[in-house]
Length: 94
Image 1 (cartoon, helix red, strand yellow):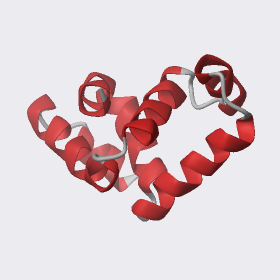
Image 2 (cartoon, helix red, strand yellow):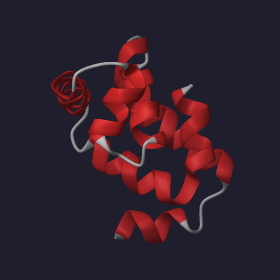
Image 3 (cartoon, helix red, strand yellow):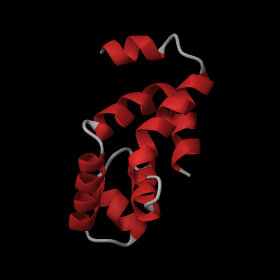
């Protein structure tokens, strides 16, 4: 909730930089970035993500776990950010 309040007063440029910092741990792993982008485009639905990527849902769960292991609370932070700055999230993930 505190992050949500802060984000309402932050510029888009700052939000974009924050997303880039949060994504830094997986920057060199294109399959994780693509999975993350499709996951958010699919409204965080694993089955839809797996269908779009033509992968088994367990593979998506495994990749999301790997992403989370790279950064504590990673997905929770990105989900909060995505509600307030989705264009910045998409730019950073692509």
